[in-house]
Image 1: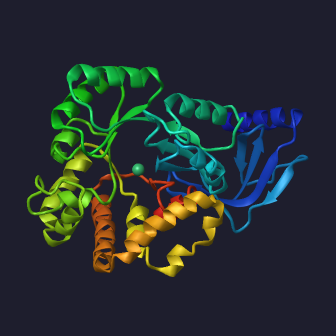
Image 2: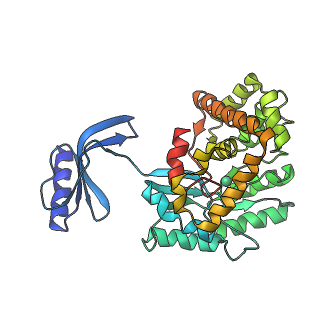
Image 3: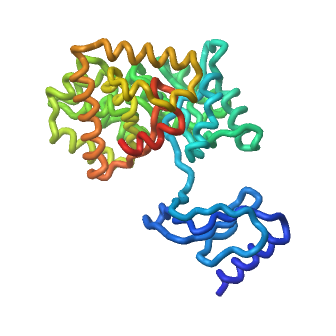
Length: 363
Ligand SMILES: [Zn+2]
């Protein structure tokens, strides 16, 4: 009863104000309850969804026929690279593909070249998007990347500054020494900033998980731990990606995945970047018509990158096998109850912003 009154109240307010948009006869993808709700009518007014109902919405509104179509909440890309000028020119591609939120994985530079954006500029971008001055996805989180820093004081200062400058989390890279990582975790906790990203080579993955490492990135990394001697096969190198296949140990892998599930860590496989390695020689992959949305200079860079992989005849079989192996491990991770988060490495070679979210979902 109360629900009906609220419903009516909302509609009355809406009619009194300005006319809205009605999407009619659409199937709603209800991601909370995991079901499809067919033949729904959705009224949008002043940028807000104000009513969802099976009855026709009366009144003077713009009407969109949604029959045989689906309506779903905005998608998120939880691993993007936007902190440079060519990349920010592609923000509309996210919106065009229904991607309304992104987690930005390298939102700073020091020193910066003329094309790069630093944290302050990225925050400006976020403000412009939030206030509708610029069309783009919500920047859900900006990162302060820590590549290679040593000493407790230096790390404390880095984290304090990052917080002050508007970072939402600290992104780690593989070269960070173990002691620095431990200092970082402590300093980040004190500032209330999560730590996510590549698990440093010197840190056993189990230790990172137990310290609350929030997300582990890339299907080129996780398989390196699914081997006979996981502590040794940690470096991101060609040699170790071969080891990941030849020394694959399913039992060790299951133990690790259980640990990830138990520690509530997220896994962001970004399979598309491995797909690029595996398909770089394939004309169908290379002649993607969606590349028309990418500027010429970037296109040239991407092609050069793909050429390097395509030329490597000896490596081709390996790239393909490693890519497939990554997919298999993500399947295992999902069955083991690991939180899988969708991220694409958007703006990496052949990872076209927005479109890539749909591609990665297929992966
Ligand atoms: Zn990345």
